[in-house]
Image (tube, rainbow, N blue to C red):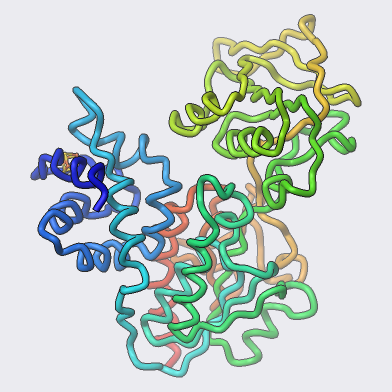
Length: 406
Ligand code: SF4
């Protein structure tokens, strides 16, 4: 066992009121996990983690731990917090293939899951455990959604997602890859075919626009498209990344790894919204940062920026007279995404809310009876752990709904 993981486990105080658990969006039983590891009960610790969070192995790699469990750890007040993510990853990764699937006998009810991202994978696993027959429809050839096509390999090795695919197949889950519902097949077609319920977890893939002139130029890419397959882009030496979140860091670090030498992340504010860990890695990778700059147009030579400031009401204002060209071979826009509207266009009973996300009630049911949704398609782009937490609740609601039909 890694000395580091054991050392970290030994530093845990086993707090009676563990702040780390409070800080975890999915309330992982962290002290229990650490105690079980130290007692050599690693497999049971992994089962406990998986039961609470089927994507524990992924979340231990990609969560914003400094704002969640580790940021709340009492040890962190005076020294470094316990490296909880390393401990969780060790347990979940080393035991993943040995986890016993607690699966109820088949109830012969079929569920269609549209989208194989964090929400879709969570729902598919949880409902399969309850005895439902699951078919997952996925527009791409592999599962993972944003985890595979939006998070770079150096943060989340794709082999982790392949392991989930194998596990889900072993559970009897069926897949229809390269097939998007909302084209030749509608949600109504699925219901007509006898699926008792449909889950939509199609994520948020439509890049948010800056809405400034020049956004359609050939030297401009959206981060979500670039991260999908960076190998096919030739960004040149000098790259301007507009945005301040983790996706901006991912795009910048990926550009550096693909040979761009001068990569600058440009934030409208005086700070970044990315985690300290991700911005720290970007810094040591050689990414530069510029603050208080807002783009006003993009030219063939690069973006033009103005200085910014916040007025008394906290609103962002431009200092127009400071407009200046930032020379760049390429511009990457990384200011988040919203859901696509393909399904809504095909099934007219599905409605969007005022934010452009899929409208659902408090039980996760959309405006189409029997059709549920969670994850980014409902909340807008959020984190993997938030999609899991939300999807756990929706899986219970779908279960109740389907049982009420029989
Ligand atoms: Fe251990 Fe820190 Fe959690 Fe306390 S808050 S139980 S020290 S991980």
